[in-house]
Image (cartoon, rainbow, N blue to C red; front, top):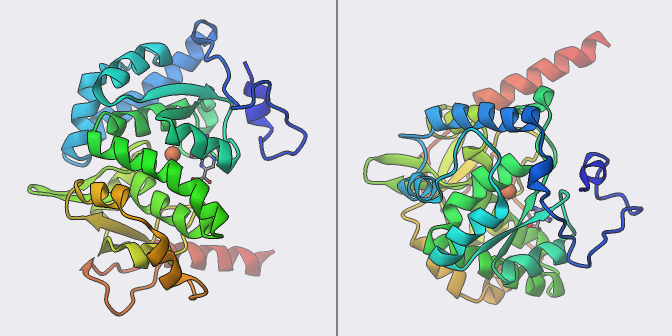
Length: 300
Ligand code: HBI
Ligand code: FE
């Protein structure tokens, strides 16, 4: 087990993985009752929130995987179900892994999932992906054949984008789809992004709050849009349907890279000419935060 490395941040150059692919044993039998209890708290909270907010594919994936509230899933059992459905597996890693290692796993239909679970005092925010984010958030969508192909293509594309100096731009596509994507369903706007479905507060904010912009997904737009890693998103990009990801999995990004190479990037909260705006956000949430931070600054 390598929770110590995860806790201290794997970005530290001093950390050396035992295996070249950074995988570790999940060590399922070593999870404590307290750790299973944290899973249960998070699971039950999201299970209440997601009907009517998460997309049908996510909810269906969840049911088919038969994940339960009472314990952290065993990756081998999950992988058996996943493998039969879409040919994916879940492998354990200590936390964030280097980009090339991450891409290599995805390109081979292995999803690297954090082995550790967050502590009771960090239920709502943590910096590194843990087992709740990775397994509850990502794995249900990997049961969907379109998402399964798209994430594999992202792994293959990642290695290529790095060679072309376009990794920063490609990572924005992953961010605004796999992590924070919304999709238009017949019965309304729904969440499919793992960063949202694994967050109690953002699963409400993303679809219900008046503050963020909601804009139709467009590849060249997303390639140029910076994102926030420290708070709710200021913009969500909305797919017409999940099938749109299939086209994204199949096309060559090179012409798009050439189109945006050297171009300026857009601020997360910007609305630009050509956007198909579904909801023009009030910006209230982030403005309020800025005011609060300014006030704090005056006082100190
Ligand atoms: N490692 N375990 C893990 N999970 C991620 O989501 C992840 C990663 N390493 C790099 C990374 N994501 C991203 O920065 C790439 O998509 C660029
Ligand atoms: Fe994630």
